[in-house]
Image (cartoon, rainbow, N blue to C red; front, side, top):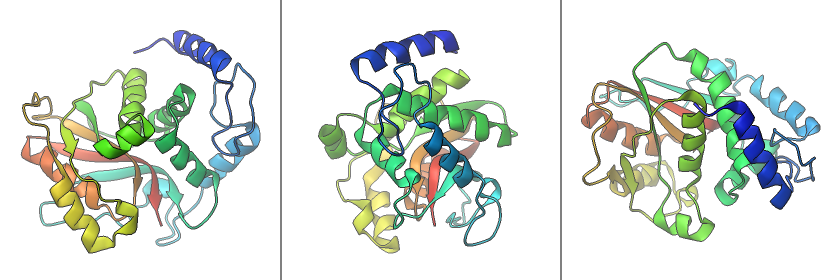
Length: 243
């Protein structure tokens, strides 16, 4: 596990070169910032975390709406920090966009810290290992990074849990433009196990990381693949779930 003081030193050095801006409002922040949110946006973020689901009325921390269980029940549980209305201009929408487009270390560390402190305590299992929903090669080329991988790396540093690089993404279709059935079909053909990947997940409880869960087609496909490779359980961690 990376020492917190060392992490703060890295962030300060990075901030000297690239002055930090708030992930919510883009305002400049102090060079010694250790949070990706300014105080006002941090308050809004905490309010979003305390919301109840607009579909079932349960607290966000207990909501299971929209998880597409199939006959194999490949997903044991799904955990998310906030609910996401893609039509509303909120700090959640801005955060998700910046994760996809930005390579700022502080941004990923802040989100990973949220997952570590908010989501990990809900897990009752041991023998954990991390993996992630990979980004398409086209988007990696376009934006210069895989945001899910970067988030997983930060979470691994915080938790000390190993990462298994198991999944590949060969598709190029934009999921945002597809309906539910098209998303399922696209996920089926786009995600696969990496050829020759070392099987580190057999008998393990796998935490599958992604930024947003919309219909659940992508995480369901990935979970099926991980179960076929011997995962005992698949637990999905996302920053947000679309409502």
